Each structure stands twice: as C-alpha cells, then as structure tokens.
Image (cartoon, rainbow, N blue to C red):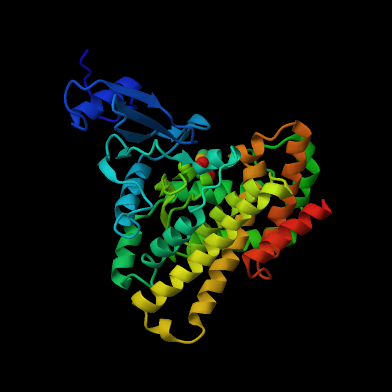
Length: 397
Ligand code: SR1
Ligand code: MG
C-alpha cells in the first residue's frame, strides 16, 4: 500500500512514519520495517522504527497542542526547530552526550535522531533500582561544557547575542514560568494534588517568605540570559546505560540562568532519593555529589583554558560565579520538587509509590524538603549540606 505524505503539517501515524523513513531513504527499499509510537512524555509523538536487524531511527514530532492536556492547550510547533538547533549546536561541544541528528523538518515539526533503544530512560531505570554509575560524571561534564561555551565566559559577545535570538522560545518558557515557578505557589487551576496534602499545600500558599524567594527565582528565570539551557533537564530527558548517557528533548532550550539546568537535575535525583530507604539511598545521592563536583571541576578547567572574558583572571571572580550558580540551583531544585508533587506534571518516582499512605507520606516529605531548599538556598554551600538538609527534614516529619 502506498501512502502519500502531505506537504502541510500532518501528525504522523505508525504507518506514515514508516513511509516517511522509506521516502527519506533511511533504509534500503523493500526492507521490512517495524514501528511503535513510544512517546510517554507530556507533549510529543515519538516513533521508533527498526528493521529486522534491529537497526533503527527515532522520529520525534511535535503536536500543535500539549498532549498531556489536549487540544484545548495549543502549543507552538517551533519547539521542534528549537530542539533540532539545540542538538546541532551541542553535538560539537558534547558529541558523546547528545544523540546524532539525522534530519529535521520545520513544516512537519520533526527531529529524526539515532536509535537509542539500547539505552533506558533514567527515571524508569532508577525506579527499577538501576544505578547508571557514570550518569552524574557525564551530566556534570555535559552541563559544564554546554553552559560554559554558550555563556559570555566561553562565547564571543556578538555570537552569543545572535544565538540568543535564534533560541527565543517564549511559549515554552511560559510553561516553565507558570508550571514550575508560579502555579504551585498559588491556588491555581493547573495544580493537582491529593486532598490529604491540602494542609501542607496551604502552608506553602500562605508562606510569604517562601513566595518572596520564589519570586526572585522567577525573575531571574525571566531576565537572566546567562547561557543556553536545555530547559527541561529531568531524569525523563536522559537515556543511559552503565556506560553511555544521552540527553534528549531540548525543546525548552533558551538563554536563562545556569542554575536552572543544574537545579532540575538535582531535584530529579532528590525526588528519587526521597523514595528510597537508607539502604539504597546512598547510590542515588552519590549522583548529587558527583554531578556538582564534576560540573565545578570541568567549568573551572574551561574557565582557565578557554575564557574569552578579560575579568576571568580576576581573583575571586570564578568563586563568585560558581557560588551564584549553586545557590540558584538549590532554589530552582526546591521549586521543581514542589511542582512535581502538587503541580500539573507529576513524576513516576512519587506516583508509583504503594501503598497510598506511603505515597502521601513521601509527598509530604517532598513538600517540606522543597520548601527548605528554597528557604535555605542562601546558606547551603555544598551538596553534602543538601543531603544533611534532607536527613533533617526526614527526621522532623
Ligand atoms: C504541559 S508540559 C508539562 C511539563 O512537561 C515537560 O516535560 C516540562 O517539564 C513541562 O513543565
Ligand atoms: Mg520533555
């Protein structure tokens, strides 16, 4: 059966995805192909196409609305162009840590990348008890390299401003501004939480000191274009194995505060850590320590070897910059922990906890811990102190 592919935007089906792969000659003609729609995220279609020898590609297509809510929430297809451009920009910087991009199509909102089916989404792997021993070493290097070379420390001022225009991403930024940095702190319609959490949630909504800190973090997110961020670096945006790590889904990319990317990674490690018992918690927390250690070390090396900014030789400047990144990361991590507990988009780490009473107790812990992260972000100066804070909140609750 021959399938005609439209020239105007058309959501793919498993059949038309195969037809597209054939038309683009990813496989020799007459090869038998198998396709499955595997998208389990909130926004897009994802097709995995393989031949009988297990060689394959992944076709990602943006939908013109937010899948998690439905057609009532229209969403720009331009995010596919942002995603393709981010990956193309990152390949030369961190070739090992992002997938190869084979093809992009603006009209069809497509990004076709290498097959990653030999890897596993980190969030699912963690829930199954996997360790991913190199994950935080890889993500620390990935963060330091992508962020340094798109910041004013590693990129020429003119080039940065041009790149900043290319990565203007207002609609996707608005999602984060609302869902991460506003709605969970007010009685907003997008929030979604169990009635048993009402008292803890009311505490958040009534805490002016907390809200003032969140307001500052949101303002930084709105105004501080430090470097090109991935913009949604949670453990569902990372494929890994024992030896490999690939960061995917950079459709939220834009120039924002460095601490946001680091903080989202911190938060999603911590969201997994709080679901664990003392016995198997350390292996997860080691990712928290190692990601920052690696980030700090790699960023410092790049600062010394590859800086384009005259003031980077000024004593104390690097320490000042790193301190601000860390402080912001702790604050943004707190916002992410809270929004993944009571906001619109939840995480399986918490949702899959059984029985129900244990899920509620863990969510209460997440809310208390998220608040502490935000409130203590000025004081906390190391990941060991974050761990100590988690232990303190766990004991108190
Ligand atoms: C409506 S989108 C909800 C969430 O999914 C994405 O992965 C982002 O994390 C966003 O906040
Ligand atoms: Mg995503």
